[in-house]
Length: 306
Image (cartoon, rainbow, N blue to C red; front, side, top):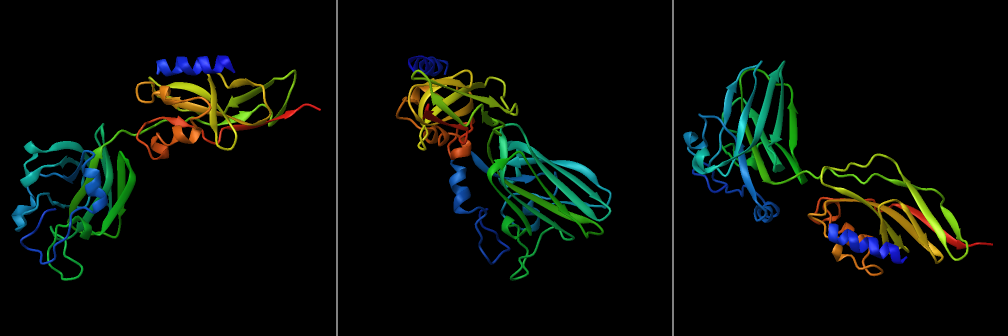
């Protein structure tokens, strides 16, 4: 096992605001989104030169798009943080692609690199401004737009398809956008060469084979991790999925796809740190590091030879 700890050591070194028309005051975003705002999140709207909400008597910023006639195909820039409809103060965070054909409206939000959508709200109607469903008064609060998606983990795209439309229409496209990078990493899966092996001359060889479906971005590395027991205590790593052990018990070989610049393997203490500990640092495990760990791995039971 000494060589595995040496490899581990080497790897570590490699390593909205109020409205003067509405009588009902509504928050633009909820508590959850306010917490996101501390992580570089902003409210955003699809932009058109005319159509700022202030033209309709509101003191919130944002735009209504239209009228759009049937057959319209085009796109609109999406700006975040453009208070008072001043795009010079805002950030261009994406594009809204619109296709209104044969009574069906298809809308797609596309985020620029470095941004992601965590909520979208879409109004579609024959009037420039929607009406509040309870009191019938005009409202620009996104929660009253009639169409919305919650995207808890964020996404670079989101879309809606609205049918049964006719005549000219208006659109208001709102989003909660955050600094975001999609984590396109996949460790794939492993299959053990044998589910059970026995100790021979005090040693047993454990081996697994990758399925070939791992996604490894540029700059990322692949490392195989050996854990012991149901607790997945890390006892070794290797550049190939093959290990030698000297004790009976349950072992598991896992694939780790990681970026040495963001995941410091120096945090791993052999015999103490678990696979669950590492997984908890990753986005998939609730952390913030983009990496992939095949937690299930390839389990192998080591027994005494008869």
